[in-house]
Length: 65
Image 1: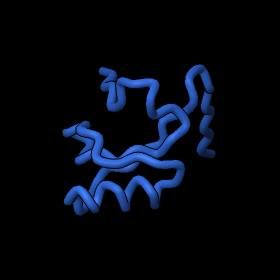
Image 2: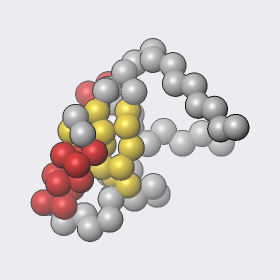
Image 3: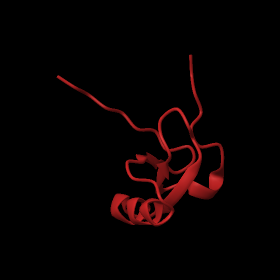
Image 4: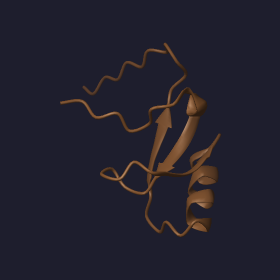
């Protein structure tokens, strides 16, 4: 099952703060996680879920070995 957390090109290449992994309401965004977190805290989110939204069509490959 796939869940889309951010459904907008507006946040491509930015860090986004969501209320939680279950509630994908965006409460902050910025070019750094600290900026997204600061904006979220100003809106009252104490422990937001921070994620990076990659640029459109950019492929990320992760390896854990």
